[in-house]
Length: 350
Image (tube, rainbow, N blue to C red; front, top):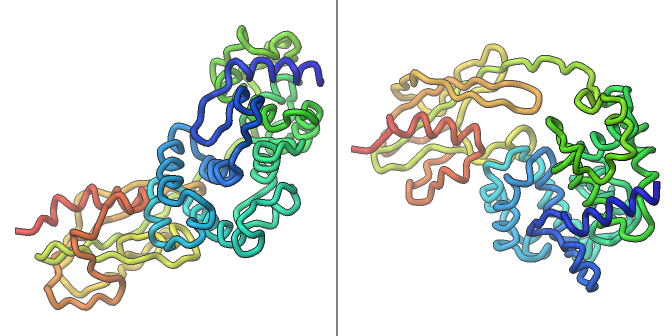
C-alpha cells in the first residue's frame, strides 16, 4: 500500500487543487507550513458544503477576523450574519465557541494532538484528523465522503454505507504515511473530488487505476453502496413579515439553541404538521399567495407568509423593528431570505 501512497503523492504534486486555505506541495517542500487557524476554519466550513460555496465565505471571514483571537473577540451577531447563506448554522455557533476555547484554554494555539482536538466544540473525528494531519503533519487518517468512495471502489467493497465505515477506515489507515501525511490526506480527498467522482469517474487518468478492484470488476459505477434513505417528512410553518411606513422591518433573533439558532429571522409559528397561528402584532395580516420552501437535513419546510403594515407606535410581542438602513437581507439565513424575496415587493413604503 505504501508504494501506492507514493504514486498518489506524485500525482498530487502535479495536480493539487489550489485553495485559499491550502499550502500546496511545492510550498510545503520549501518549508512553508499551513496556518492551523486557516485549516480549522476551512474544515468547519466544508462540513456538508462544497468547496465552491466555501471559498468566498472563507476569504470573508479571514478578512474580517484574521486571527483566532480576533474571531474569539467578535460579536456573536456579526459572525452569524457573516455566515448567513452557508447553512448548517450550528457550525457557526461552534466556530465561535471553539475559537474562544482555543484562546482561553490553549493560548490561541490549536493543539496538534487528535485527542485534544476532539475536546474542542464542533470538532468530530474527521475534522480532528484533518486538522492534525494537514496543519501539523501528524499521521492521522481522514475519512470523508470522498475517501469512503475511493476506498470502496479501490477494494470493491460491497458492504453498504454507513455499515461499511469501520471497514473503509481500516483500509484508509493502511495508506496513511508517516511522511507527508498532510499532503496525502489532501491528495486522497482531491482524488475523490476530481477523478473518482460519484458519477462518471475518470478512471482512465486515475493514479490508482491499475490496482483498482472496482474497475477490474466493473462495479465502479455501483460503489459505494448505500442503505436506502428514509423519506424526509414535511413540516409546515407561518412567517409574519411586518413593516412600518418609515421602512423598518420587524425581525427577531432566534434562540441560540435549536435550528437557525442565533440568526435573524421573521417572527412566526412553530414548524410542525399543524402550526398554530402566532402573530407578533395585532394588525390586519394578509396571506401572501406564495409559500417559501426549503429543505433542511432531516425535513422539508413549507412556510405560509403573512404580511402586514404596522403603526408607528406598534409594540411587538416578539422581536424589534430594525430601520431599513440597518437591515441587510444578506444577513438572513437562506430560508428567511426566501421569505423576504417573496414578501418585500408587497411591503414597499409609499
